[in-house]
Length: 287
Ligand SMILES: NC(=O)c1ccc[n+]([C@@H]2O[C@H](COP(=O)([O-])OP(=O)(O)OC[C@H]3O[C@@H](n4cnc5c(N)ncnc54)[C@H](OP(=O)(O)O)[C@@H]3O)[C@@H](O)[C@H]2O)c1
Image (cartoon, rainbow, N blue to C red; front, side):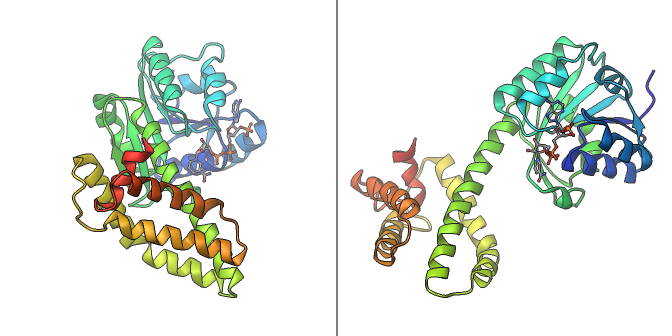
């Protein structure tokens, strides 16, 4: 018998935030977590505790899971008696595309529905009108669960029926984040070496972030169109800029690891005859 509106499986930093947002929206929440301490804390805040995974899944029409990774998901879905029987599993664990496909298959085999979401925000950023979460899976399930997901994140982006699409797009956005992170830290070494204030550097990066975001949006549209006619930034500018980064690193005794990678890619693109194409044409030598 169903005893709550939604079940949250996994009470790490993100799962606790998710359970709290559901409660704040007046929902009755059942929780399950591998270790008991967090469960007791949630019960003290008004949640219902399920004794095992099967009961947690049976307690609500919708189960939202948010645990560490693919392995944790596989372990939980293999728990004795875990089934859906008409219920919906919304997987908010950051998982691989293959794990998302496995999850969709598991839901089908257990007579249920499945959505996969990739959270693009920290716990403290959840529940805001613009909190970004990528979602994919069967459209009818998306239509049915959209309002519930909006209690967690106002900036939902639905990527279509393929259950793996959110996890795949998450790999793309992560690539951007880690590329930017490594570049940012290299920039910090330059600032430090020259005695500039690194906190000021961080503030400047925040301030120029939106305009570079708009630039990347443009470059994405260029790559999607396949037309690399110069429209914003000729690739040759980046050949010079990244060569300058490399020369400066060598001259100042800084690590050349990042600038060598960046300069190497742009130089290779120039040698391939792309110098007078739009900057995003480096994709031709990166595939
Ligand atoms: N925190 C963030 O900033 C953030 C941002 C975006 C996306 N996410 C994603 O959200 C997910 C959860 O992150 P989090 O920050 O909540 O992680 P976390 O605080 O480390 O919590 C991990 C959760 O997974 C559970 N778990 C781990 N292995 C398990 C297993 N084998 N069987 C059952 N449960 C298991 C843990 O249970 P125990 O309590 O028993 O250890 C705990 O509930 C991750 O996929 C993460 O990538 C997090």
